[in-house]
Image (tube, rainbow over all chains, first blue to last red; front, side, top):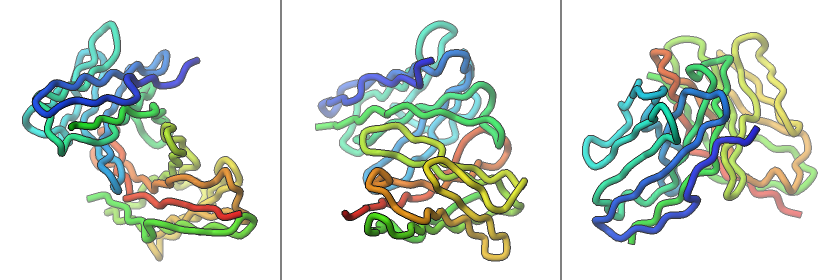
Length: 116
Length: 114
């Protein structure tokens, strides 16, 4: 059973371009979470999705950021018109049910976005 | 609100000596708590979790942590450091409201010297 797969592992974008980050959850997992890790900081929650639904997007910036988790295919985190401050590592995690005390969330290796 | 504070951003130990990574939490109730490890260019891996069953929790790779309510602490320890323990360690608490989100501490970088 492959783990959580994120691609690309590294992504370089010029200011103003769009960045698309993909996350394929573990087999059988229908809950996906996105986190952002800025340099020298811990991970910050961005959004929690179930298949075709956004459950909690309280950590998403109000503009330029969007996320989806379609019925088929990976979850996508999309950043439009990237700026230098978007440079960070973006991690995806998945779980069988809603992450809770007895439900472990498994993390991918992350996508490191660099905006030049 | 739920929060965790990791008291050291960097810890350096010699191989074979004990490891202590400190974490204090803030919660309006007795929370669940986790420690995750992040090796360079790898994803995060769950080391151990506290779920109120026992205050001393044993995890993988010889790590353990003790929940102390009176001190609001959940420090991570290991009796003898190994070179492969060099990594970033995060103390984590679930967010309120059963939304599934995790709240991470700032992280502690553990360096292990030969």
